[in-house]
Length: 389
Image (cartoon, rainbow, N blue to C red; front, side):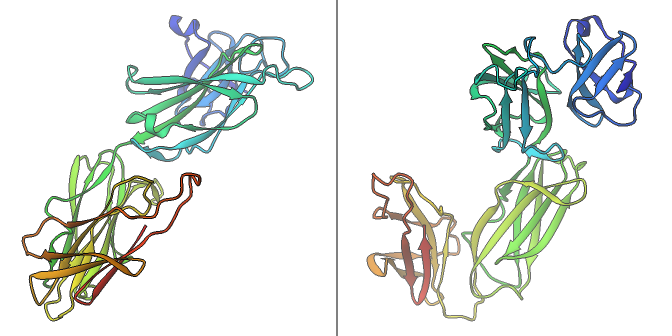
């Protein structure tokens, strides 16, 4: 048990849940959930229901010492909500979906039978910094049956309180919410306007560029070339530039005639320097002309690895022929040519040609969820690329 010295305001006196700080109690550390606080000024016991941060926690005022977390009286055990699969030590990325496991527990009688098999789970997500930012809802749930609750896309930038309460016909209303505190940060990775994968590169090096967006969070930016990490940048949390350009030059030792796979990866940097949550990486192909080869180069733009039935399938591509600006391109499916095209390459080209595929094999209607592999091929002047989705 801990001793507290918090002066309770008039508004707090009318609430069951009271917010404490570490300075309000005789302790150097935040108490654990379910620990008791005897607050000397008002003479009340409080049971800790949630640790909001290293300096703040919530206490539920008990009308009888040793009582539980709320609900109607007459039961041996009050309603509660069990929460797992959420990490308070990392920041979540704004707009990304993340899930926690929530298990609703009905009030229990003295024989350990649930008062209600079916309950209503009420949830609220609100900003700690701006009380006007809040969203809430209700879910029909079953006693002691875990559900996956998606919370990531509902978070506001900064600190967030995620609160749960339960209601049941017999259990009543859970008076003390279960609360989790998480941090949400904004960061993004975008292609730099001065770098494009549709240009044919040559010379002594290839300079790759991207733009990192987001402030107040430490980040790790990695540059990958043909599956090898070639450079890492660390961006400190106090670097408050909303947009920042990063570049890395790939040496001639890695540049061979043909196409190459380039990838930018951006991570949140944790307190111990390790990598945390990441945003969607940038992946693309670039083409390099060694200027002493007669081999053609085919490089592909971005396309999906999986398409749904009736999706429009478009494969972007470019072809460079060292011997001529004109190239004949042949398209195959399962080894059989189904089309061809005459294309022209220009050093000023900034747009891919497009191959629209209309004969992809889709799963039959009676096999919903099935996946079928499609194999295509592009060839031109001896160069060849496989397309699989």
